[in-house]
Image (cartoon, rainbow over the protein chains, first blue to last red):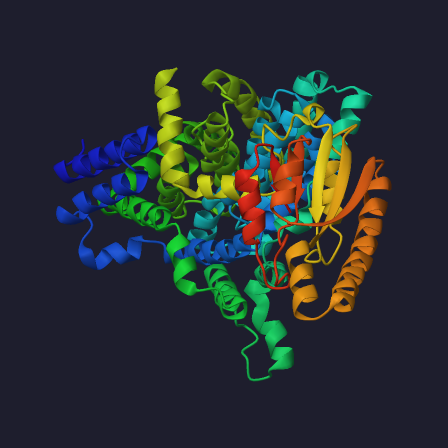
Length: 442
Length: 181
């Protein structure tokens, strides 16, 4: 039987999540309002509120937002979009494959929302030139963004949250989730070619005209500031290198500066903030312009979610659910199975960010009775690939569907659900099998 | 599914805000609009040139190659008013020297553009005249389907201009579609 306080915490949690799904109130406002209620009622006391907010996640997102917003000003994304379009040489199948791969790679290292927001207009333009139905191309872009994002620590918000809370490194993500994302990406392309390949035909003459029109696009003209472009690319590469060595940076620094402790390690959030500082100093871009573009609503949304979930932790609800889960599963194999599939299907309904926020403390709680290390990967797999399940499961989906609707291309819920669920089932099944193999459970 | 469409609309608005409008504007600068995507309607293109054009734009040659079977007429104009001022304030020889130098530059420019177009299989014609850079373009434009204007056309400071006043005024005054490059 739940106590009154537990009941209130649960009602606030459920009400907030319903508001987030429905979005009649801005998700950030819904999360903050929920957080305000639990703080006001003392369920999360002010003193412990900051302990519940994962600043590793918040600062990592903030640092990457600064880097991306400076890079955006140089025309980097438009340049990538035009180069990709030209490489396809007027072939619809190549457009689908190349845009999917480029979206997956860019999403693995940069924010999914910005990536798809900047690539979608170009994809729509090319499909218009080809006089083909844009829907398969847009669906492939969404799914590639989610699959690509699953491959790295910084690729998708659920991974950032998991890494920050569980203390996982960038290299651990790339060695465990990277191969899964790569295999799943190949499977996604096979699925798309099998389902839509036949409809992607153009005559040789049409191909020639399309190539000519696309070749008339000037990727150099898309670069609005050449110096900034070079600086942005350099800083992004530097940040990626720093992510690769963040957990052992002391070893490298010690070689150059012997006074540096070889055990020194940087948190991923520190890497992002260092990158942000470098790009701001080097580019001389007005900082107020960039700080204005930080998605404060997203950061407050995350902070609010952490506090609401903190209320469930403080009232013992997470512990109760965790005890129930432990009683239901008898070993890691089963726990991974439950976490991966539950998070995948629940993400499809709730949106993978709030879902991950709720499941992280649950897994922490389970660590008292079992080694939860493999469970983090099952959660990462389920939350990221679950983002493909429905149209509202991940931010990238909403952005592409929103842009498409503005341009008169409507993708119905069922249209998305059919290919989304097929992809979800295939990618989670294969990913889970790979995780079992990696942890010696097969 | 009105509820589904409403949710997507609300979520999109909350996630993207006004960013998409800014992106659309950026893209519109280098991808063709619906109107520009109808190449069959463009059969004749006028490209006014003058001394403010200091280099050949390969990208405009590439872009115009989309308009299949269209003929590009390159028109190099030397300002008649300046020529007259030189003649009046100095002498006829100075005026002739001015004209000779401008025409020499114009010939090189037209040669380069001709090569640029012909290498892409675009038929082109060339003309050179002494006249008014704005009025003559407006007068001749009626015989063409599209006008392509260099961004610093008729500017006295081609190195430092973003878009010249004459290029903007012409684009606004012309009845035909115009591209400023």
